[in-house]
Image (spheres, rainbow, N blue to C red):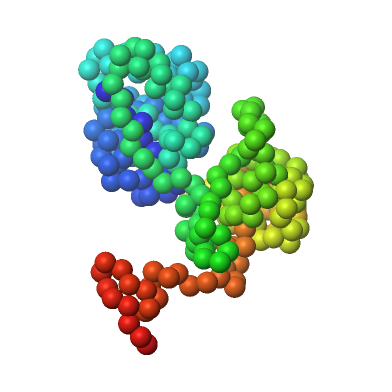
Amino acid sequence: MVYFVGAGTGAADLITVRGMRLLEQADVIIYAGSLVNPELLAYAKKECEIFNSATMTLSEVLAVMQQSQEAEKMLVRLHTGDPSIYGAIREQMDELDRLGIPYESCPGVSACFGAAASLNIEYTLPGISQSLIITRMEGKTKVPTKESIESFAAHQASMAIYLSTGMLEELSQRLIAGGYEKNTPAALVYKATWKDEEAYLCTVETLAATAKEHGITKTALVLVGDVLTYQHYQKSRLYAPDFSTEFRQAKEE
């Protein structure tokens, strides 16, 4: 049996309880060593076999999975954040289907939510934004034309941009071309929730300069939107005294 487990945002104690228990039970762990906090491996039992997928090809990962299945061992494939976001899990699952190896997924907390916690922000402030766009700049992995940075920027919604730290000048230009003002609030969060986390507020225009000033070249998340300064928002109707729910009746104050 193979379990795809989300490692969470970075801090070892932010993995889900279910994810932690699966790590404790695993006979074999394949973890994404380039991004997963190695402290999570402390949950593994002493005799657990551990492989770092950063040094492996897809075929090598699948070979370990197949060998584990044949030996009736339980294997955890430990991915950063939540496996469903930039986790490259579908290609593994398709091969497991072909091989007849059963698998399940255990969700994790993605980095954009760890970054929000670090900055104490709410992505969906009434009157400012009710949507969160999760996207990335095009690199080795192509991005569909209809999902360009410019087209998303036109919505003026909150944005969390992954895997783009090395292209910040271009990112700024494309965000501005799409409709964001140069002084739109932005944030650069390096290794959100890790012990060596760094977080900096800036603007869309100064993203590259902020990264250069602080020596950030990778493993950072870019956030964009007026929610970062949380000004001029409207209060939620959920807790308004004149709003009735199934749990309470409206009342005058």
